[in-house]
Image 1: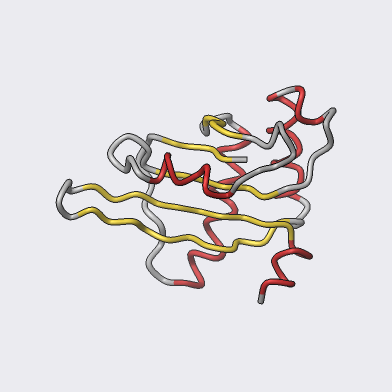
Image 2: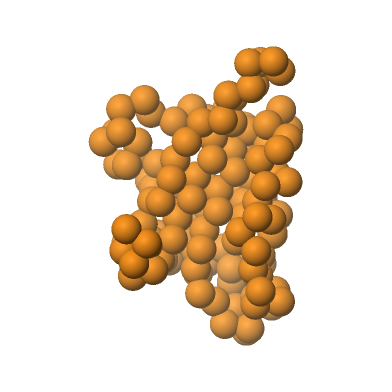
Length: 127
């Protein structure tokens, strides 16, 4: 699932702080519905490149969060269920922070944060 947030948020500079603080912030903003869900895997053929269109417009989309989580067809029928399942996975520690980077566009004077979470078992296979 891809979410966007247009408010102000800057990633912590120190990597340990980033690893500690980013999951908390994402869980808080998911719980309060501050993120707008802009893409999800309805077809079961999710293409990670879909997030690229939100990343491409850093002035509008200040923060892009991708959560890679296996959901059932029933889960995908409701935005509320998708939010709930993502939040539950975050709170239960089932997701691993894969990436938390800042995409700086000096030409436009914009800074965008890009955050990616994946299921822990799948994330560990990649390393």
